[in-house]
Length: 142
Ligand SMILES: [Zn+2]
Image (cartoon, rainbow, N blue to C red):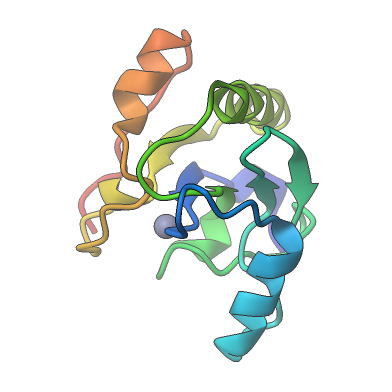
């Protein structure tokens, strides 16, 4: 069970699937079941058309950022290299909603955690946040 007051990081991911593959939360769920997990590791999934699909409920600890799952929520943009305007608009609305519910939290990208070599979500979350007037804070070095 995630303690709402403990949520520090709102972590942006990508699915690292081909940009022309129109998958969604169901396929991510299948993929993560295949990893031997309890289904999808994210809390929200944003399809290529900008639809917001549910992953785990916010109170259920995610599986998306190693070592930090107990203090974070994860949202996954479907795609790899480029994302659609509709996806970025959906991302903004999810993050704004989360910041209202978890005002102590801040936004970052998966790759901003020092433990990982991943490039996920393949765009600079901090500068994107700045362009939308959202506050992003890099996680401290682990
Ligand atoms: Zn990721």
